[in-house]
Image (cartoon, rainbow, N blue to C red):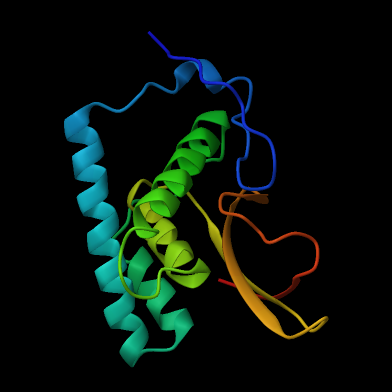
Length: 157
């Protein structure tokens, strides 16, 4: 039986598509634990890779040995949003650099392992001061906070 949760508004909370709301079941305790371990392992893998390789190589490595991507659907969007929320919640409690690039790399890895095609986007703005930001999109929709309209797209991986 699906548990309905109240929708939260604002850019941090992206709504599930109507056709996927009933298909999202709460995770059992053991599934949450496995997901937490998977997120932590992907974080460690991404951090190690960033120390030695350029970002494009890191992203390719995170996607390596993954199943062929499936066609985007309401179910894949719902799963991607759920994973994005889980990554954000867990990484905020870890020491070290868990800002947008780390979150985006971890989510890219999780989605690739599930055959969900995603694009890691790196953008920047120059005013009022220079700031760069990274986020992940699935079928053109952000799965992590894209930082608003002020970031121009620089690279899509």
